[in-house]
Image (cartoon, rainbow, N blue to C red):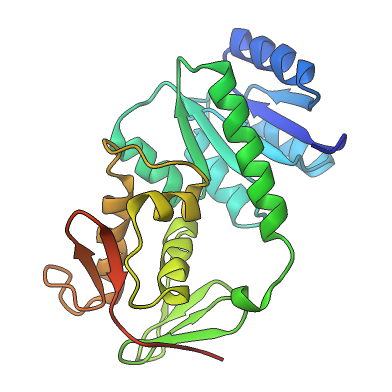
Length: 239
């Protein structure tokens, strides 16, 4: 860990702010705090952190709004730390740009492990490599721009993708005709292990299918392989 690693914690619970501040500082991180999105914006504009820990239930604008705003301008890791444990909240958070999702109450060592994993993946993903650039062509004329993170339909329409939908589709086009397990897909999009009870991947797959399949109920591009995971069955060319 670099001595420049800084974390912005956004939560309206002062007890949580004190707890995380003391714990993360003890682990060697620089910690800044905010109790609402207005304060968070001021902190972010003054000096962007290396990672954001974000609650959902904030006064005024909620954490979802702030996550979407930050993700539109930065790839800084966002870890949502919230009391909301419903699957729909997790899916919405991940779709809006969060990189990981942890519910309260939490175990400090697990939080630290997730922070380290997110920072490690962030550093590794920053250098541009050949495998992350170019245009991936698949199916009947679909084009995924790996550099600009844009998807174009066979008719040329720009199809909107969330951050996690892009990472998911990118994993498939880089490994065509290969079965990708849920564990591998979760690691690709969120940097964490898959919990067998966590259906986030299945929900994201369903949403992605609605955007690229002619008939999402009978998918021809992304197929489920029972007991193993999912596979992109179309050939892919990257140029």
